[in-house]
Image (cartoon, rainbow, N blue to C red; front, side, top):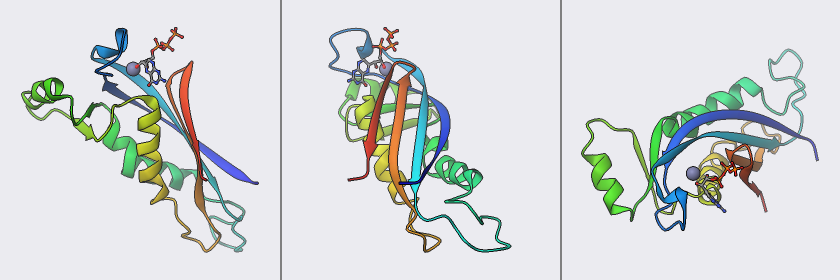
Length: 148
Ligand SMILES: Nc1nc2c(c(=O)[nH]1)N=C([C@H](O)[C@H](O)COP(=O)(O)OP(=O)(O)OP(=O)(O)O)CN2
Ligand SMILES: [Zn+2]
């Protein structure tokens, strides 16, 4: 299978409220997101996308619009983490992203995949789709999801 991968990075805060150790504290990461797309190579002479699955600059622009700019410099918080939600809501204009699950890297990867699979759709009639997403929480820790 032929794929392309675009890497983007963003910073976000989180905590894992039930964690047995350090990760129950408020802290942050520089996350690395790898978006892997598949589809036929575009064959259209004179078209800017000719020879590509999708232009990397368009992959970046869409990923930023729908996910990266939403999560960058946000605090990502579980909807049942009441203490942190109360605190964040006391901060004027704080950038907070509330999600329906604990913000482990596994869960963030699943949320990101759900969002981006609706963005990277068959826009060229080439079968373009999101094949895989990798989210690194630290250089040593990451989660991967591959389209079933
Ligand atoms: N399965 C998971 N385990 C842990 C998660 C997670 O999301 N899924 N998250 C954390 C912490 O939030 C943190 O991201 C990881 O901390 P740590 O284990 O300290 O990772 P480091 O890469 O910094 O560790 P080094 O020992 O410095 O390599 C914890 N567990
Ligand atoms: Zn963490």
